[in-house]
Amino acid sequence: MAEMLISREPATGAEFWRGEHGDVDAALSRARAAFPAWAARPLAERAALLERFAELVKEQGDNLATLIARETGKPLWEAKTEVAAVAGKVAISIRAHGERTGERVDDAPGGRSALRHKPHGVMAVLGPYNFPAHLPNGHMVPALLAGNVCVFKPSEKTPAVGEALVALYHQAGMPKDVVQCLIGAVNEGRALTSDPRIDGVLFTGSSTTGVAIGKALAERPGVICALEMGGNNPLVIWDTPRMADAAAIVVQSAYTTAGQRCTAARRLIVKHSVADALLAELLPLIDRIRVGAPFDDPQPYMGPVIDNDAADGLERGYAQLLEKGATVLRPLKQPDPTLPFLTPAIVEVTGLADLPDRELFGPLLQLTRVSDLDTAIAAANDTDYGLSASFVGGTEDEWQRFWRESRAGIVNRNRPTNGASSAAPFGGTGLSGNHRPGAFYAADYCAYPVASAEGDEPEATIATGLKD
Image (cartoon, rainbow, N blue to C red):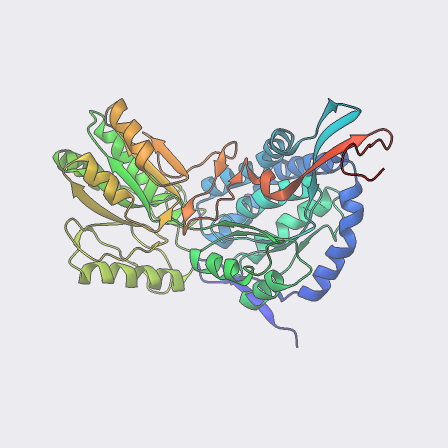
């Protein structure tokens, strides 16, 4: 009997979807065979199919948003924003393809000098569960536009969304072997990324898995590898008369998507002289956060985390912080032990040593008070991650210094750490990425440059070094 994969609705625990694990060998064989014809199709034809895909996403957006909300547990309002990002990715990718990987032909003595780009071939795309449509789609649209074919393995926690996303590509007229959904878990992911028939791995997920993929590909430099991983992101609050706005930025940064964003703020670094004023605004605001199921009315701000395993891991991380002496400002609670709803938590860790440098992927924020900007910048950079950082308040000179000295691929001012634009590059340093930023710069890893010196006729002379 074929092995079955089952996903459950986080908000209810009920079985939501089940299906058989896919056949990696068969999927790659079909992809390999489909690549030459797809790469040979004119760019305009590939773009037109993707534009039709975007229209279908808009037309069927309510159904897709409902599916995302049910399988991830995120509120319906947030699922709708994810659907909008899926549709919007196509136009952005077409523009990025032209700007980043377009064709240039210049006149040269006796001919031309040309720069063009070629697709890599078969791309293995591994998606996460927190944005199960938007994030893998952010790899697939530019990859397909460039002429690659994609074998997409969705997270084993959100297979239904992955299956529905690929079905929309097929409905738009994309050949079924050009973009495939491979259902599976760890074994299928490992088999896919280690197979010699792949030409690229496009991954979004945890740093642990990303590092393992990088190690597995270390002896295959010809395989393009784009790793979008997690973050232990700092949010610095400095002098500002708009403390209520600063508190709202903290909530948006730390608790949107129940903290299940790679760009979510994990560490809140606050100037000591404004900390009490911030907490006077922040703690009552946290208490007002509505935690609930995706279709509750009124809508919640936060849904559950993805499952009870994730909730258990967060509770272990929370307990570890308490063991090291953290002070609870708002506790992490699981009201129903059978369901992964968690309350938004914040603990103070000022002065504590040996804090774990971990991405606690949920609604848990650690506050540290600091006396000066030197200490704030040092605390912000005290991590092996480097995805996102934000600086709220302060003077123009203080902001400029923070921007210069902070180590992150996204550095914001007076804005949340999360909510990055698809029209900008997205990626980080250290354990957050391998210097292949996605979003607008995804075009860079979906095609490689080919330089050509071209003449209309063979023409060459050898002026020196020949015998008479």
